[in-house]
Length: 72
Image 1 (cartoon, rainbow, N blue to C red):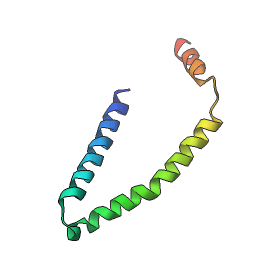
Image 2: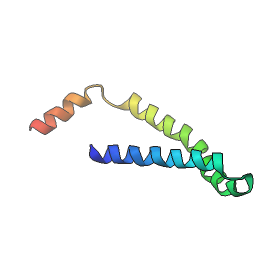
Image 3: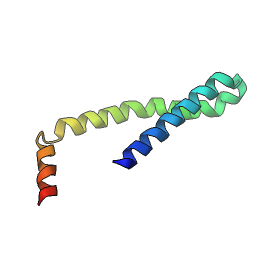
Image 4: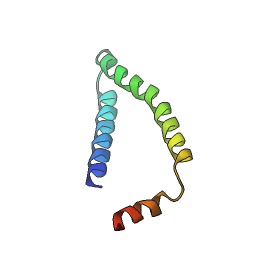
C-alpha cells in the first residue's frame, strides 16, 4: 500500500515539474520536453484501454476472493 502512495506522489511531482518547466523555459529549450510530453500523449490511450479491458474481464467477486486467501 505504501508503494502505491509513493508512486502516486512521484508521478504528481513529475507532472508538476513538467508544467512549471513548460511555463518558464523559452521555446528553444522546450524541444527536449516535447518528446516526453508526446510520449505521454501516445501512452495515455493505451493505458486507458488496458485498464478498461482489465476491468471488463476481472471477476466481480475478487475482493471476497482476496479476503478468503488472506484468512486461509
